[in-house]
Length: 303
Image (cartoon, rainbow, N blue to C red; front, top):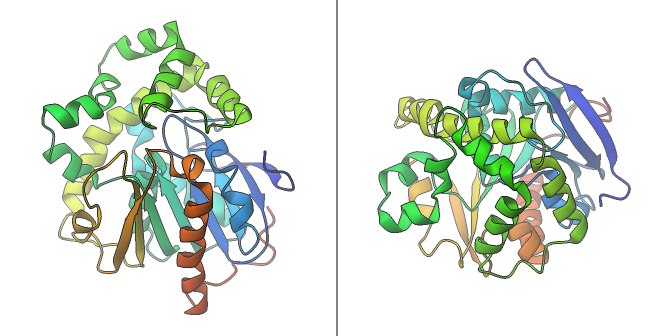
């Protein structure tokens, strides 16, 4: 995977971030979702790299990035967003396009709020705002996103249960969240997901990440609701087999320039529908370049 991409590691003020970088042109940062790693972009990144400098990074606590042990506060989306700002700065990019899926989308949302000068264009895949999700929980929603309430349990309960068979835990989610058919996942990507989740430190970090989401992150979003908005254009894409409703209206609470629509997929757009996903992202990002949305960054972008 990622033939022709450089493999790098950047030390930030809070973590060490593992990444791959390839292509030339305006910089674009791709952030993965849960329970995956940067490997989820292996089909989309090369297509975007034909036009852009593409950086795919493992989030703090995931993949091969470091996994600091400081409790849920260490995994606030504000802290994880700062990791990515400092990573892109180290690569020479002060302003960039940003694409996030699932957990990476929540980091991207927070980055766009806290560091609006950094983000030229923002694409969020397969998420509604955190506060919208928490306010809409009924028995059906709770069943679909049960992990929000399982991973947050204290005193090592989810960590121990997941560690009993991390491969089963991972594959169960990949299969069920893609509508029961996980045959589209590349074997080499599956091997990466399994390898990374087998690490007990990754399991602990995954749980603390979710613990932060429903506590610290929700509090941060509540403090910003009605006070701060996403300044750049926002594209929202989602899988029609995963989310039945329209995700554009809830994002209008957070941004003025919002567009989006569903794709015929489950929760894993970049792997279920890579051609369509890449085409949508490329068109959105290229529109920004044509309008002078962001520069190429400093120098060559080489760390």
